[in-house]
Length: 519
Image 1: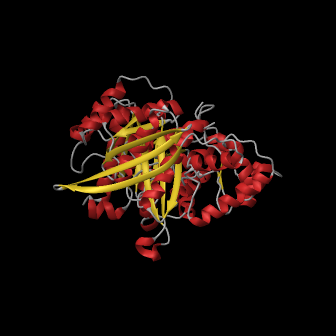
Image 2: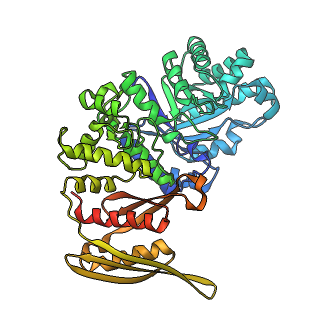
């Protein structure tokens, strides 16, 4: 059975037109396979003939079995003054061998007369000829009515005539496009309602996010009768992007109770979002609704206290429904419940009335006031809690360190010396590095590895510096955040000092200490 609303993904075509997005043919195949497994109904692969990558994708797509999705090729109506069967665009789109072809045509009389430089009747013929020809070739045809809403607002009778021409010629679905992204939900609902009344065919919606209303306009269209939504994963697309499928899919499924996906798919939504970002080489937006890292993160003490008793008091859904997780943050805004829940999450047993709980809370508030920040440095927080509970035995101490720099011709050489003590034994190492922090990292790691060989597998993956209280100039306090990995798990640590080297050493020491003592 067909779902009440079908999802049409155009990440590989419209999404790839976004600034900074560039997919190889192999990237497109991998994303399409992921979308198919997720349960997307249509996957638009690109524009045949526009570039070699798209043609390579269609060749590979034609050889693959697709479980849930139908692959669509995208093109435009025939050129003016040309017979449809003689148009190279039609030959290219048929060579893609997709079961579905999506054709874009003009709805706005302004575009017909000023951009196409065609007569209104000629545009109607271009639409009808193209849809009819492709349907006669055995293709399912979807018609994208470009600038549908702008066109209707200025010349409603002509816009309707273009949509009707596609419908009479056999288009399975007429998709109304808010191409400029400037319409309000009330405009969308009104015009989709008119189209539903006038046209005897399925309606779809294609929205852009120029006013931040891409998702809202998609919902307005569904409520007015549209049964297909076009969009992109993570909202990629021209200018500010398209309707974000990672937002509208859960809205349809969880808020409007529309059965649009196979059972179990929605719980993989966050995974899908992150997968596509990874392929696109784009950092995942932590504040993205539903699938972002902070979508279900709680920081205020009142909020955390409430969700500990009734989760839905501050969560509109169970995070697991979309593959996300609840996170409790700890800061100077934290109450006792924050500390208790965070300690439990990190593997510690902490009683509400224990004196250590007050000690830990006070330490966190004091250190946050000094510039420490634990939201991205949970390993440092775990060490703070462990030390307060006397559950964390120091695996080593740094007794002394020295960092120097000297010139060698045109280049600079940084050198660090570190003295450590492990179980009444001393270690002393000198190392050179690309900079003072790199040299210090190498020296510390080398000094410790003879005591703890497992540290050979530990690598520093990210290093960030934040200057605090900039009004104090070069004497400002510095916060250093470090991310470290053992190849399986990653953790963050923090250091704060007026001396950037000292702040870096604090974070480096915490990162290695956590590697040796983590639960």
